[in-house]
Image 1 (tube, one colour):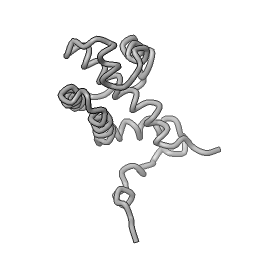
Image 2: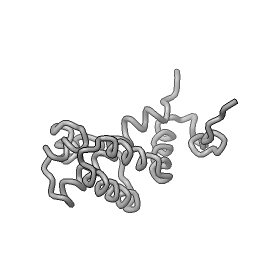
Image 3: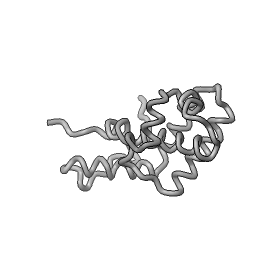
Image 4: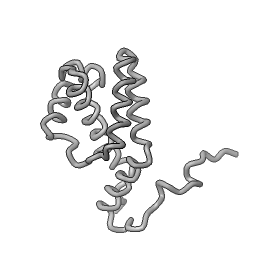
Length: 132
């Protein structure tokens, strides 16, 4: 049986948790409606409601440092509300923070018994793109 890939963990847990925090910050700190947040993030109002009521993406808890980075992203996203690429860029930036990568690895290890000592995500030679 093939082990779960880190990318599957990221799609199932990390990306929804980032969206959850962005939605929460936009609603609480910027007083945006669920409809406005759904439009800005390119999600449905139902998804935003599920984030708000802890029915989706409740498994991941970010540190205050990561939350502060997500706040910075929220500022940038609102400053360029019509630019959907900004949303993608900011979610990508957050997902690549070292602290978030460690959460991903911890989740992956907890779901895959054979990965107790895995450190693949942080091996330097894998980070460089190799060409001819």
